[in-house]
Length: 57
Image 1 (cartoon, one colour):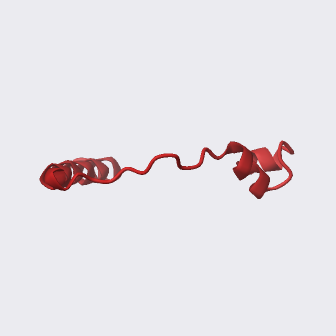
Image 2: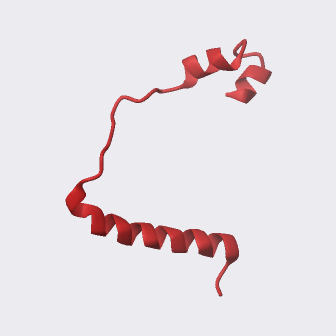
């Protein structure tokens, strides 16, 4: 969006956000019964992030 403003496509950030932003049409809520699955997946996600950031130990 900032690039579009700098390039002169839009006059300012507010206009760029209005034209380029998709907004939120749907809200997703977690399923309580799946909390354990979510925790396990999140733990894997954290390990992947650590691997990407710091490499293998």
